[in-house]
Length: 474
Ligand SMILES: [Zn+2]
Image (cartoon, rainbow, N blue to C red; front, top):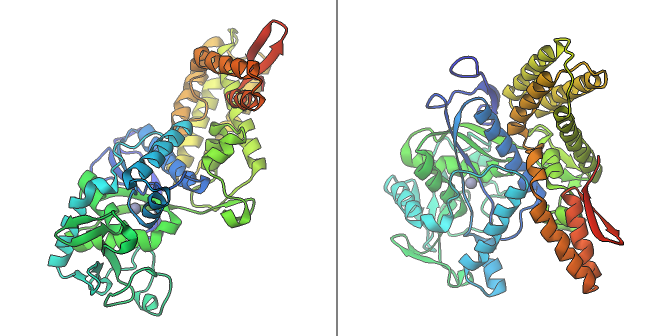
């Protein structure tokens, strides 16, 4: 960081322009990102969004900002209620299972955790309060069914994010199909009156017996943890309307202040050129890919390496290429540790400066990761050929290694390679578990563990003296 504030530009969905990022408080950034609905394992489309947000955060931190990040957990909606009823268990028991799974998934993808993960069910009083404010301002009303609705016509700015026209909404369309008993077709529910389908899921509040709508949770929880106005709100492009549009209407309707300064949306993910759907047989959760033996860090690399505002086409070929790219970076760093030479041409420092400028300039330009990565691989190629010629000194190699580690704070794909060396106790435990499975002639289990170890880069050899393991050579 050269001056107080680096010059970072983001494409702001609100203005449809790239803008210089200026936080409300110098050097501090407050970010809210819409989190998972915890009724199932998260799929790779979800993780594309979470990885874009991780890259954004990591880049801001790299540039010296102190980031406060809040991600909500939607644990109350039609899907979570249905899911818990189907399994015949309490809502909290059902959602806790998927919350735990979500945290395991983000850990394995090396996603840095948010500062707060508020659950919707823990914030009912805050939502009730917000709805009461909207009622007092006559922006919300009680429908004949007892539900509380937001009156879209009372908020003239409605549509400013998505560019949806209210007049077009009235004509029919896709908004709020599941809502009824309201004055205008486009009005959306803030509080849903209890119905039989909700079973034992309800709250007795001043608004009546019922439960909150989805949109209100993000308005209530973002303001609780980040204030009435904050810097950045992210999410997938499919959340722009109606979810984010409604968040703006609720929050700005209640406070009269601007809700969010920068809105950032990532584009859709396709799989093998098609919309990802269970119907097409191309629907993958992270766990599906891990079960096929893919390395989570290769998945991380693949999902974040296309610019967030471009449609991304997930392919298994791409996943193989991502694995090779990660290995190339890791091998490069390993090679740097082995340099013992003293010869220097002075060129390394120039190349390092060029990389820092190329990588940094690209990332500052609306997180242009594609160009940033190509600067990185150009650098790796050039230094590798200098290593071949033995014209890099030990000190220079250490400096290059340091730069690689700094950039990996942003990418999160190389990791601490020396830490890998300190892992054998975990590996041994798995190897032993496999041995026991083999003795018990449980070949399926033994094969699963072998695949699991392979995903960790450990190859097993069954010898006459017993099993041996070594690290996979790329
Ligand atoms: Zn949200």
